[in-house]
Amino acid sequence: MRARLLSSLLRMRRPPLALGVVVGVVCVTAETLLALPLARMASTSPLGLVYLPGILLVSYFWGLPFGVVTALGSGLVYDLFLIPPTHRITLFTSWSWIALVVFLVVALLVSGAAALLRALLLEADERRCEADVSAGTARLLLRADHLCAVLPVVARRLARDLGLPSLAVKFGPVGDDRSHTTLPLSDEGTRFGSLVVPAGLPETTLRRLRERVVPSLEAALVAARHREAAACALAASRDELARVAEEQAALRRVATLVARGVRPTEIFGAVAREMGLIVNADHTAIERYEPDRTVVLMSSWSASDGGPPPPVGLRRRLHEEGLSALVLRTGQPEMIMVDETTAGELGRWARDEENGVAIGGPIVVEGRLWGVMITFFRGLERRPEGVEERMRDFTELVVTAISNALARDELAASRARVVAASDETRHRIERDLHDGAQQRLVSLGLQVRMAEAAVPPELPELRQQLSHTAEGLTLVLEDLRELSRGIHPAILSKGGLGPALKMLARRSAVPVDLRVRVAERLPERVEVAVYYIVSESLTNVAKHARASLVGVDVQATAEGATVVIRDDGAGGADPAKGSGLIGLSDRVQALDGTIEITSPIGHGTTLTAVIPIRDG
Image (cartoon, rainbow, N blue to C red):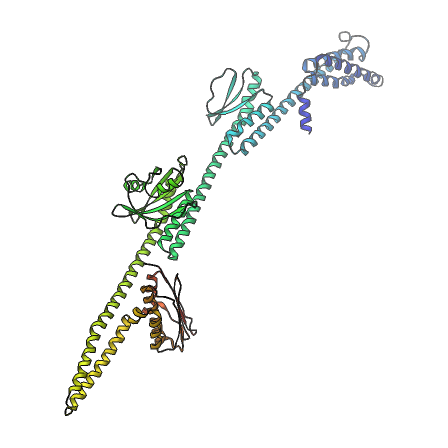
């Protein structure tokens, strides 16, 4: 408040000269009237001090020249009325002129001091105002999000605070214009902008702008430019960090699926979805290259519900002008414009929505171009920035997961083929034994019995030998049938799980509580797996568990078959130490199933196996 009041007093325009004359006359008259009574009581020499306030007032408000005139007038009145003899000029008639000269010197010094004080106060106030302007300008510049957008506001405030008709702050070169004066703005000798003011300003104003305003404005602009550059770099780093975090989160989700051992189709579907979300695509697809120049659709994803997705495994021939063929030729990310005539899913997407842009990135697995990742963006004008790089980075991250999934799938397929081949071999051996060796043994037994019946009564030893031979053949036949059942039970092929499991329960050395809830025949591979799980488990219980009862529960739904086997034995079964349990685990996992064994010591063993039912 005081600063604003002082500033308004200092900046007040100098009063008219006539008013100064009146003020001077009034001051001199009032001071003389005050000094006359004092002259009767004291010496007249110090009474000259009475005139100094008037001189100080006039000098302060009307300047040094008028202050000097007031000082001379005060000295004349002082000599005329206060220095004896009074009412006459004594300057050249007596020694009293010494006091008058002293008074004049002091009065002139006071007048000069008042004028100098006003000049100093004006300069100080100007500097304070300039500091306020610089501070306000710096606040505006440093708080602005976009420096160029705030320059017009800064220019208007500078013009208002400096009392200029107009002002502009511009970056870069400014053309010559006679109506304006350009003051350069530089940073360490390098010019980066200009302060443009109207032409014809007084030289003092221009000097003030160059010496006081421009340096502070340069410092504020440089700091603001550095802040804006730092903010841009920080925003870019923040965006890059968010992108990396997004990609890492997507990679973790894909890796979790791989670790859970889900099917490759699910993994490829997750990869297509994550890629679409990362690059904000409308559609994505993953295609695998085949040696016969065809591609197989591994998965696809759409941001919107545009009808049923294309079937996984769809095969099509490569078109030479298509995106997949282009990526195959170059081995690099490629982009094409998509319309209704484009081959494959790209053409369908264009027909369903509108023309767009498609970008394809190669998928390289173990140094071999395995397939292509395709992203589709609706609208020809929607050409995204940096998509190729993001696709390449994410594909490099997930290629290990894809490789692991493929290796896992190939291993599972190989194991399934081995199990299927083993089952087929067992079945063939059982059939060969049944149709070959068993039938010949039966025929041989009948022939021995017929020979026994034809032996004459007088040869009892021969009859007895033939009888023993026939009985031996019967025992060999029974052993062969038992061996045949262990290789592949014929009852399983003919009657299904129910009769086959009942046969196992009857033959078990440990009592079995059997519950079978299977409404219809299951695929042969599933029935064989369930049969061998129950058979191997009952064998292990009889050998190791010391159990009194075994519970076998088998049920089947449309999704899969579940086998739960419990015993009340000693427990402590370790799958890692038993080749039978390892074989069961391999057989179940070959069918994409799961097996879990819980066997706390002293509390029996529980085996749970789940086998999915799928066609093919």
